[in-house]
Image 1 (cartoon, protein in one colour):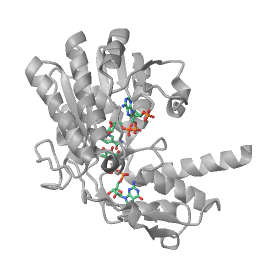
Image 2 (cartoon, rainbow, N blue to C red; image 1 turned 30 degrees about the vertical axis):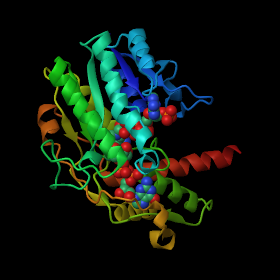
Image 3 (tube, rainbow, N blue to C red; image 1 turned 90 degrees about the vertical axis):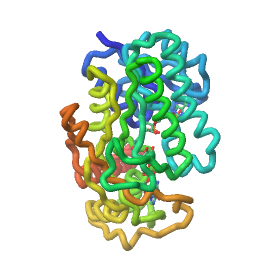
Image 4 (spheres, protein in one colour; image 1 turned 60 degrees about the vertical axis):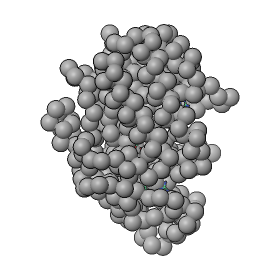
Length: 324
Ligand code: NAP
Ligand code: F7E
């Protein structure tokens, strides 16, 4: 039986990855930050099957203790503040969590057991102002937010530990991936939630930012499979993970409202508050390397994903209404 430690296990990806590893008969440990209230909604259905331990990316000792206490074969570093706009408000803290947090974790592995395999959650935000379309593992990086800059540091420190200490460290450069478990501020979930509220008469409008930006969106459940695959190879390498399709925010909005029988133009209002200081205009990934070497491909396509999210939010509000 293998053992895995997932940082950020209560996040969107952490919850899907924990489910996957349990199915594969792993012993699963997950770190959560200490807080006065519980934030375990996404993992409540598997809480009895995984072991939660305290671990904060800001605190070196907690990471060393988490590794010593769980003795993992694999570590998946998914923890972090992942909402991009918030990182302009807290650029220094973003560097601490994301850039130095990954370094603290790598140092903890180096000190405790260098044979542990390490996965770093890198991101398409590192491509930022893109140098080419589509983006692959060779594309030049040009991050456009404190989030992207901090992730780029974490990405290169992962490469550096691989090359300096001969450790098995990989980065998955994952493009946007969504699900009904996505946080409510992210654009797909913000839209699916608003469509549900409008459909059920709980809200009248949806305030949005830049509708022209384009993203390559996949399903989180498909993307966690590749995290695991990356740690099962003979040699550690980095991979771009994407669908290869790109769609605008306007297309997303249109699909979501139409699915609920609504015309988005009757409800969507542009609010400059949601426009970012610097935008990533166009993301489209080329994941040929992962498709060939890891035999991976996404299963859920974009329109289906949006419909699943809208249906899930409508059902959630319906259930709440009937139970109150
Ligand atoms: P998420 O839902 O925001 O989950 C992040 C988790 O990290 C949360 O459980 C959060 O816990 C925890 N966390 C935050 N700060 C922490 C700290 N200092 N110490 C320990 N835990 C901390 O994000 P996600 O969508 O699952 O993404 C997982 C990772 O992949 C993130 O690193 C993200 O940046 C990266 N990524 C995501 C995407 C995507 O499209 N989803 C794409 C590329 C890369 P709290 O509840 O305590 O805040
Ligand atoms: O924005 C535009 C916004 O916040 C997508 C994170 O998981 O994926 C995510 O980062 C786009 C942007 O995600 C609104 O300007 C328009 O162009 O859903 P998002 P993100 O910034 O792409 C990457 C890969 C990560 O690594 C991150 O952790 O949508 N947009 N109007 C809006 N976005 C939001 N949130 N809200 C709006 O009202």
